[in-house]
Length: 153
Image (cartoon, rainbow, N blue to C red):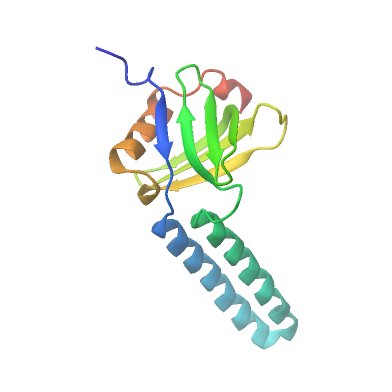
C-alpha cells in the first residue's frame, strides 16, 4: 500500500465563482462605505476609482485571466513545488507558507527558487479544484507539512 502523502499531488486550478463573489462583495461594501463617508467629506469620492481598479485587478486573478495566473500546481514528495502560469511557463520553488480556512479556502504562498524574498500567493476556494483534490491538499498541508517550514515562519 502506497503512502498518499509521498505521492506527487497534481492540481489543475480552475476559475472560482466563490472567489469572484467574495471579491465583488468585499469591494462593493468598501465602495458603499466610501460613498457614505463622502457625504461628509467629498474628497473621499476620489477613492472610489481606486477601489474599483483594485477590484477589477483581483477579479482578473479570480478568472485566471492574468498572464501570471497559476493554472496548475504539483507538490512533489520531497517538498518541491512546481506551478504553471497561464502563459505556459513552469516555475519551481518551495512553499513559503499556507493558510487553510475550514473546507472552503486554502491560500498558498510560493517562493520560486530564483527569488529569495518574492513570494506568490495562490488563493484556492473550494470550487477552484475538484472536491477530492481540494480535500487531499488540505489534509496534506495539515498532516504532512513541508519539513523546515515551521522553522522559517
